[in-house]
Image: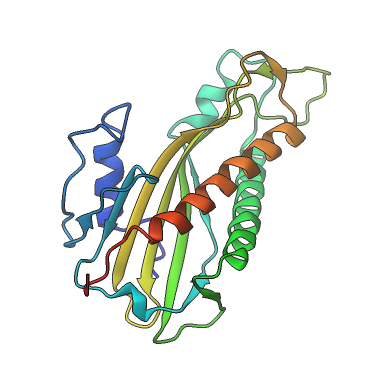
Length: 225
């Protein structure tokens, strides 16, 4: 698996998708990527692509790789602008680590609950590698330690974009790419933003994404269809 957060095909999807505010109705999403992946008309994931020559029915197991998280550009600077609660680089790295841990925990649990794939830890001829990445992470009102008792209130925990890549675990061939952008639930009224509340919203959002991934895989046609 590529050490980067995502591959060129995925980057193309993200750039195209983020050029508009509503992905599902965006005319800018390409029907094919530079790597030959073809768009699938998904009812669940906003951008879903697959290798039309690949037979996914061949794969009976899945290996989840360590998730990766990348903040929205200039998130730290923008978060601290005009705020009495300063977020440090150390705080930012702790948030990243916490999000990666929750992401891994939630996706692992959901994968173990589904019956399509066996969950394994080693590559093999019938194994798909799953790389999950969250990019453009924008945490609203992060709860960090300060010397003063400052409380921050917000209606939403934030927004993020999910990137999913699935590869043949032995050849490294890219077979499926999915992208989906979501905002945490709007509480309709201002609530005190705490680590507990933000973590709960992250878990809810990541579980939703994991469920969507499993459902979306059933929408991907195989080469024999």
